[in-house]
Image 1 (tube, one colour):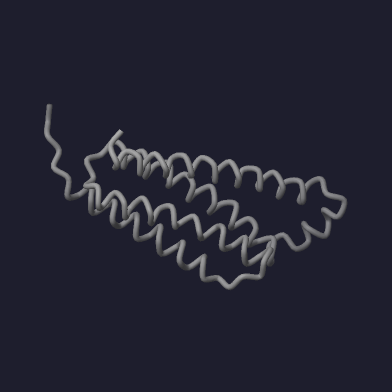
Image 2: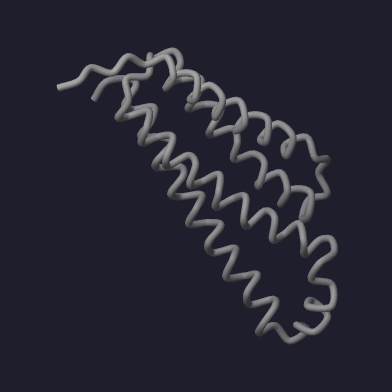
Length: 141
């Protein structure tokens, strides 16, 4: 396996593990809303902080995990130059800081720095991958 393929492989593997984690977190949210002893209190504050942010973390965690899987697959399959692939891979992985940062805000009272860094990272990775794809020269068989 060449170095570039290994980079995409990391995005796929980490993306799957983080996705599984946020799926489990989704089950926790379902429990809190539907089965917990104080579910009425949870439902009453469903659209305000921190419950709204918890759902944002769940959705963005799964979305950004899926993007890591897709970007990793594309990095393995497409002829993206190794230097570009490293940047795209790293920035896509750093994008996972966004949903983790939301959880950090909720449970650890952290400032939103990780959310901003993660969001900008995944945006930059998307732009760079788009540029790389447009620059590719495909040969017909």
